[in-house]
Image (tube, rainbow, N blue to C red):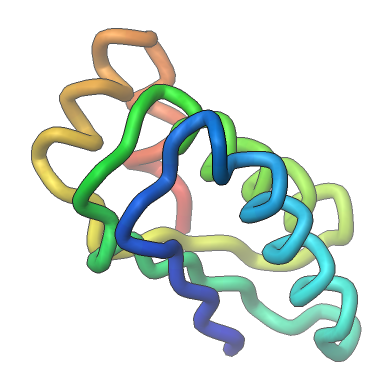
Length: 93
């Protein structure tokens, strides 16, 4: 399993580059390797962080890779509930 970590700050300014880095890292993994996103370092974020998480999930699933997230803080989960994507975030795994 590959553990890919989110940065401590993930706002609109960093989102595109972060998603590209995560997708590039996934592309380097052996076929079928699990993808695990660790969000425990995430401290400063906006809704763009959700877009990165969901984009990473989408890329992993499109490549038929098992996907999971960990380290999602209460504020991240609260934002996901606000946007109605908490089911996608909480059920990743």
